[in-house]
Length: 421
Image (tube, one colour):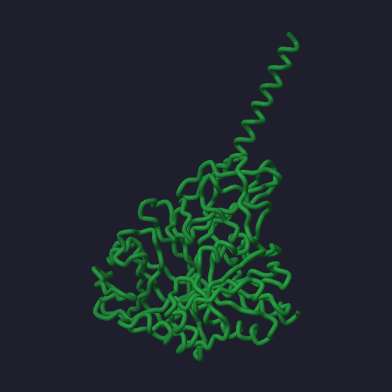
């Protein structure tokens, strides 16, 4: 009898341990939204502002009339702009939400956001104002009201000598709009990542949910701009650049597997709001990701002139290879191009420009306009997936021994590294 009693006790303890372990695999994720490049980054995108004339709002291709304005805005000097957002399928402008700014040329501008996308600015609540020159905007998903995509908006404060060049660059994209001086524009940073510090079996982990689809919810999507999840050991600092970690992200499904403290875990369930996640132990193999320190064994690139070059060609004469990922549409790429030219002048590096979301014609025009001296190619699925490219510009530096020594967003870091060689 005593042996049976002891056996029952042991079985009960095993049952309790299993229950506790199961509970440890369920996580509540708070709405801690962070910038992928770290909260201390100085990387921003510009929001051009346009004069509101005759109550007409004009984006790159369409012209729409505002349905209603708050009474106190009528007759005042107003400007408008757009925020990219894919979480509202009934918005008057596809994948864009319109906002209006009152007192845009003052220190206390007021922003009225057309949150439901109907161009009626009387049903969206109170305007928002800047605090310490920045503010956070949440755009609700149409189907999941508890979910939102977040932006941090700021004031451009761009230097006068750069303002006219920036204005001219955007003027060609908005030929039917009256653009105001760039010094009054807004800047935006996408808080597209939820960062959550958790513990797994009493050990620290960090869960990162990246809303790359820009719709405010977290769903399975294997496309280039699909949502991604990363789970890593330790507690990451949200003020540091997270891009290198996010590059290792997996599509949000049961094939996403992460090695944590010697065990493999897959996703059992995640809700669209990204507020609840459950893991389970798995035997599914983790995907192999290329990262800094990895060796590139083979790489063929088809250039826009139709020729194909191999990794061996690039690394000849003990030179490095720099893959410059960007696009003719990418403002940050254009701003950093002078530094990449300095890298090229060192004669220590072969460069290949890889253009995404472009055509042979747009690339050829870009090469001519910016006097690019190195070979260029169009993006391919293999070139994108090989290095897990998820932002532009991205610079991948490969050493003569074929090892990746840098994957970075800032060209000055590449130049600094090369100058030391």
